Length: 154
Image (cartoon, rainbow, N blue to C red; front, side):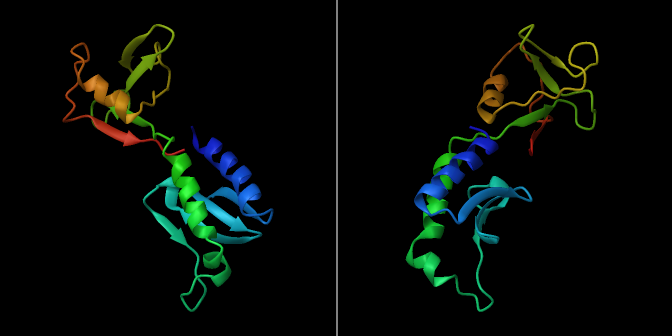
């Protein structure tokens, strides 16, 4: 499940479970719950362990939202959906070398490094579990201690 699917499913859920005045959007990279034009709660950059909610000037959260468990319901549903989201990563095999990214061609079923003939300017994105499997392969001559594995931010 990707971020767009998460937002879409949360929107359907919010309208059904919370009411038509609620919506979910990606706001500045965050997964955010709105009521009308007021932001209520959000996950910073879709990070499931970095959850925040809006409080009033005196530091108290809106009593109605607490009483009706709105924030808690959004948090729990978003965590459920985000658990199906697996971030993607690029693998830079030689630090600082922009043409040294691990790539995979689904056409030829082969691995290679970034070059204009084979991969153009594509940087293949892999999941953590795929990368862990690559580390076990003898046919990939990569010094994993020197490789730069960087999360792709959509």
